[in-house]
Image 1 (cartoon, one colour):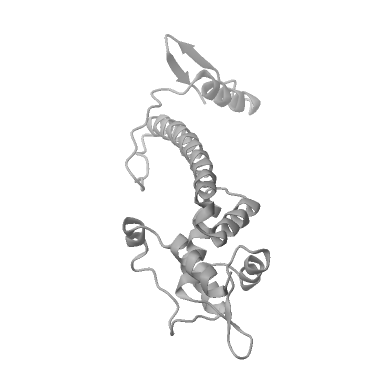
Image 2: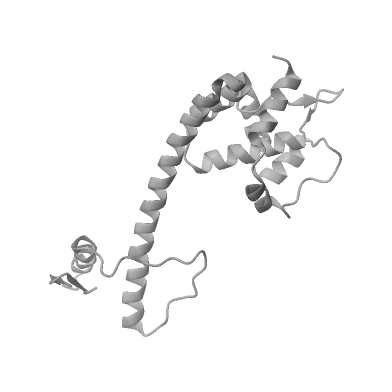
Length: 202
């Protein structure tokens, strides 16, 4: 497969739908022409030059053009691909799976089903992590509210998307954890759980 064909397929794969692309509006790109040096790309992406070279070496990056002096010259399409790679990293996808995905992209249309399967499995993992984080957020919100009532100090202003906590009271495990910490500190704190209500002391 020619270098041009590989770059075209990678570009198509990296191009986000309109609603996702809108999120990137206003993000500064390196100044200059249609080609960017490795230092400019490093500054834009937050990746080190060493990491960018490593990505290319292991096959996670497509072929990067070179100048007449042999210096790498990244295109806007390369930046879009790196943005996608960054999203995949956030999902917890392993480097091996990311390289595999890049290889599948380079192989063309015959690998679409396999790419879909890989991303669907990744998506399930993301949903699991989101659910776990929401549970954790519920517990934190409950604990903050509990301590706020004790101190009389209102909770600090919260940022982020609106979230309705489902943690009316943490389970006995949360209460006993507090009690255990307090008891080990010599405070003799206890917790009482009755009729579905949890009293947290500590």
